[in-house]
Length: 255
Image (tube, rainbow, N blue to C red; front, side, top):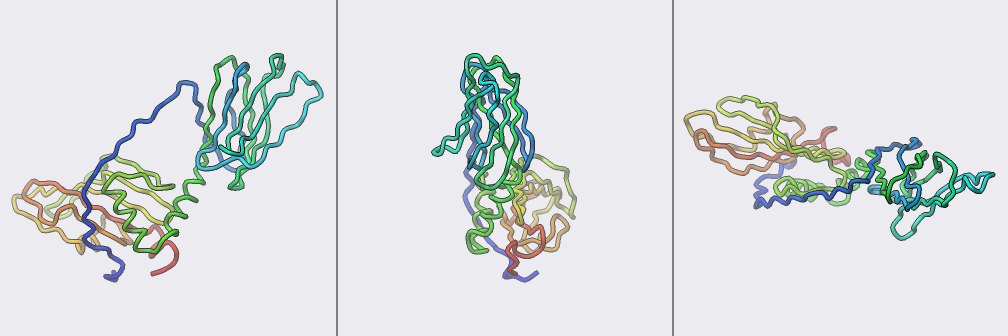
């Protein structure tokens, strides 16, 4: 591999940030795709808020019924990009249905059951948006800066736009005196970052180098490598960070 394609020595102090999500009992989370029909519940007597994760509502369409008792209010807040649904006191229908088009061009059909529940929130999540945001992040700055920002995020366990992040302990892979275990993944559009725990199982110290990972079968299409430590004492462990291209080469087509 060309040496210019490898970023070496990205030693950054580790600072782990954790955040505990605040969960509301009545919240509903719907996974959507373009032109999908979304099912959920709206409050019969209070307001229902619908929010698009990573997107905003651009327009709404609903058919005005012949019977005024079957009509309902669905309004778009241009400031927040959210939808608010309210029903009249004598609403006689069992469902409300309408179409919403987002600013990113996705159209959804909502078919929501009327329920005797308090004010509720519905969060619409479209997986395609994550890929779009990851692509934008990867191409928003020069190639090397993208790799540095991704590497820093893995060191610090930071969130990146559109990247699917998983922290888990995978199966071990033996390579000579060392054993590797994948413990984290940053999955973007064209890039994937991987975090490995490396364990020296031997009784002798081992010197680690980026070159060993370039030719190893741990992963392919390596673009950047960062080592937490270069000298591993017997029975000791360390962390190795790698960034690879999913397609081969730089995601923008550059080499």
